[in-house]
Image (cartoon, each protein chain N blue to C red):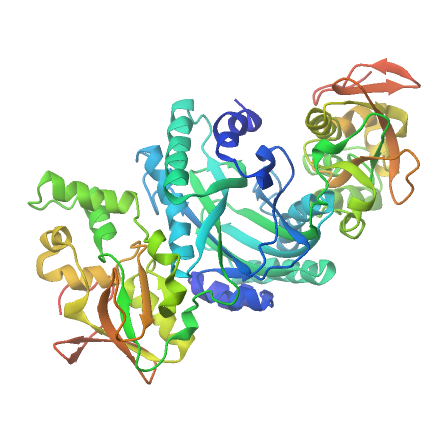
Length: 306
Length: 306
């Protein structure tokens, strides 16, 4: 089947918004939404770097989508639409395409979004998703709003995706099947806090999605805001499964890994909600780590103990 | 240099709009523009399919951009922003990146657009551009608006890009250096009628950018509009260079080729402007061709004479 057939059969049914014109035009359109800014983010995932070609196609599709949904959530935006730029290997099967499209369909229902357009090329499997969301005008949560005196928070748990990747790459430890499945699923299908993100602008002063690694991403916030962020190591939320995988290495592994797709943000110290306080903002620059109040060295990706 | 260095050095200087946040955040934003729809299109070009890796990097950048600007022009939208998803081979040189960025910079100035964001991956060279433009609310020119009695028009000349590609692939004919350069440049750097496109909604009833080939793209308009389009062969504008290249094959080559990035549209038969009348709209479906009023067979890409 050629590109037109693939679009008509697998992707046009996902394009429900009138502005998508059933994927039958040169372009799509989004009507003006007075009082709202349109937030736009684009991310690509590539075979072997971000997923394995043998992963279930539904999950590859979900990962491609959710990597962008995570950025929208971290900016306080309610997701609405996405564009899909798909690079497919020659001879991709109809079964694969059907499963891939069903992963998109499932997430469209879960997150109330729809396909607006896209393009297709041939080559090593890669999925680039451009996500569109709405936030009240001027309220997008930037990296640059952290203030001295803020507390630092994170949603979910940190490191799980990297644990799943380590398992897929052959790390053999005495984990049970359920623990193993939990971590591998966190690698394959990120769980960005989309519902929580929609009102993030009511709470957060600055925010970032945790994709490069907790320390690296908080470094982006510190740099953009002109402040120093202190992370209190013992507060960083780790799952029991991740702790079982790495033992005493778990913290260092977690904060230097990436692919978490949770939200790290700064806000008033009296904030409460579905998130964990992990540190505070002081004058200065960069990120520092403490254990029981004492400064310790920042682990790097190759670091094992501290 | 890593991805962050490349972005800071070569791409952040292209991101002048406040909504791009200097490419230092997770997302960009576009404020609401009351009275205007935002038109969105995305296209990717890939090494060996759409350009050669040895082409001048400035021109590869320009082609990547202009392929999307052409879609915006065909919809009556004034271009404003673009996202760049770039797949770069390992070890790409700084010279290459600098030249690529200078091609973007030149076209940003020419078309009054700016970079809003993007992402980067590693692999065979590929450039995906998502273009954003504005059109007065409800005025986007769709493929579906052609009416019986309309005339059919096209901007520029048809086939030149395919002629340039034939020359690059080794076709040897007695063209002079200037004719050869003209055609090769049309392949490498499309010339979409962006300024003309900005007010297309005042003229056109239906429109498409000519990228798949004139006959194929007019077929999309006929199908979306529920009409038959008759192309009067002798009216299709061909350049002297293209005619010199193909001789009696020129017309068949031109209308079955692609990559023209001109606009084909239908409008009132009394329309005048920088475009050529090439046919008319009747009841029925599909596209038909006439020579001196007589129906002839549609040439296919492999067709040589008729």
